[in-house]
Image (cartoon, rainbow, N blue to C red):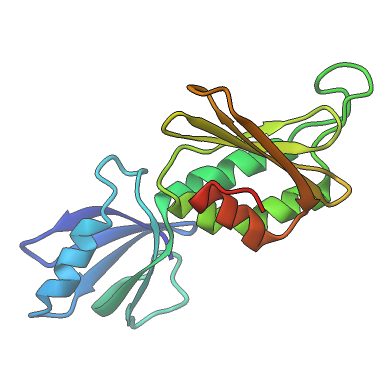
Length: 194
């Protein structure tokens, strides 16, 4: 599993960057769909690409840098958008007591766990998402659709405050509910309060 960083059409091979290093992968012959797939998920800059799982054959699994041949599958494991959101959540875990002055708390572990439950749908929404820590251990998730600003304030006690604010009409709607992943995803996708 890793990121495809180079593709060579002449040899039908690509380089896969993994945690263990770089691996050379050679596609099975006459599989144009798989060659297209490798190009589609290629990180042109060496970074900006999804994580992929590659299935093929190898003669020596014990080597640090595995050489795969007859690659038969390339599957996206985590989209680039999802990787970005995961990295942002990781940064939230680095906050310590007092990060915003005396008595401020880092995001509560339970809040971060709830965010992990919705990372994939947040990433696949196709809109910029922000995570803003609150000094009381909560995290606010914010996004904008057209003229409406949305936020979901995930509280340490399990409550979730959903807000939609139409900046053109000044209509403000708010609801406090118990956190449910489906409720948050519906609010993200449809913009309607429960």
